[in-house]
Length: 146
Image 1 (spheres, helix red, strand yellow):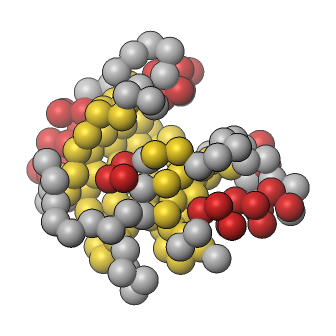
Image 2 (image 1 turned 30 degrees about the horizontal axis):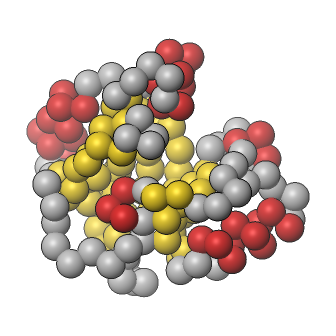
Image 3 (image 1 turned 45 degrees about the vertical axis):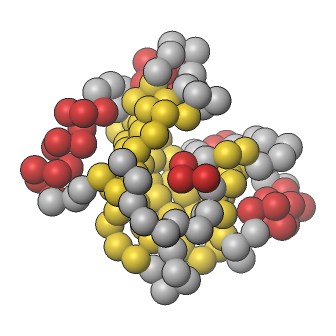
């Protein structure tokens, strides 16, 4: 089922300043960055390490690009900080269905496009002890993109 912690999503007001903090403080570098118009965010993926299943673990820094995005609303309510945790899976469709069968609400009927071409869905935080949880099936990543 779930194979790794894929990433921890951190909401921020200023992506560039937040990236610089993680670079200067911990030595983490940007592995990938993009704007996801559908989700209304500009993001940077900072690779922490590779994992046994051929994937990797990242910090995902998220800055909203519009006020009506989920991340913007979350920031307005909570301020900067941990937004969600994401678990990697080989099959987001099957695992989301299995988790739904256990009574957990899945937020997207069909998985959507996520970072670096991945397929994602979210689980309702009220069903996950207050934690917004993402399921991720990674796309093959051949080399870093910036």
